[in-house]
Length: 359
Image (cartoon, rainbow, N blue to C red; front, side, top):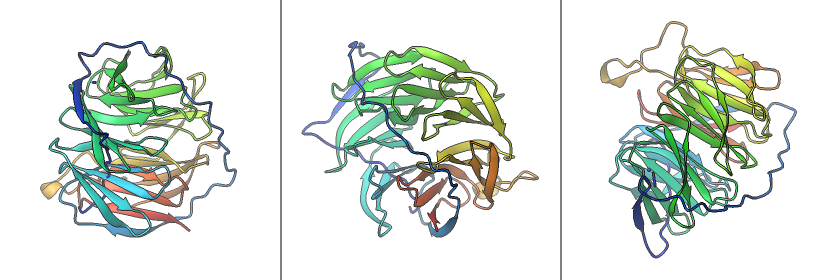
């Protein structure tokens, strides 16, 4: 298959054996994989934006590159540039397990929707799958390129892999082999996300476009053009109505998730957009920008007018409702499933994790 103290989490499990296979050479089995029925999402009408910073976790030896909450919200996985994945107990904010692989940066993390697996994507062209009940590695997948993002489909039967290549890999989890390769981009794929019902897949690329795919057939539904630079962040709204893209052109675009038509843009950042996260079960989007330029000792240099911002948006009204200035060097972010905690990870200027809590 085509892979503190700041907080980064990666979990993979071991089921009697660990295998390593090449996705580039595997033949697609043409499996008839099934998905669960569409997810019913109830969307809150009252924006919940009363988040306050409650804790900063410092002391990581490497940059924080990826974070992911387990589906039950009890665990946080944190991936770093020092080959480690730290598993945190969210109740105590203590590390309960460290997973170390000799595969350089842990650039992507994703829990399966049933919580049984943790997938980690690495700079050295591999994805590892972990059993979260034992923290043993189940399998290792060769991807031939640096892994940028991971996403499980609706019934956890397929793991989508975005990497420094123009093809997206769909991995059959049960049979441990490549299911499909999605061809449509002309540049490296930087971001990927399944829709809430698992029926569609969206990807963002260095070719400045996003693509909506049929998650079952692998057919390309629509190419979304409009950004003038890399599309490096992508997210579906919890109700499945909107698809949001964030780009190195500092812009955020809102698209109709069904038709792929452009709806509106969100303007407020003075730097490239690197994270997009929805408050669970709401219409509130949080966007974070990244500083590209760094001075001596990797200290971020702010552009005039830039506040290293986190901005809360109401995507129904297309208006910003709150802005938080301060922590630069943002690399990743995630909400806990209940929306109580919001985590940001930072790769430069401190190598730390910030914990926000809903009040």
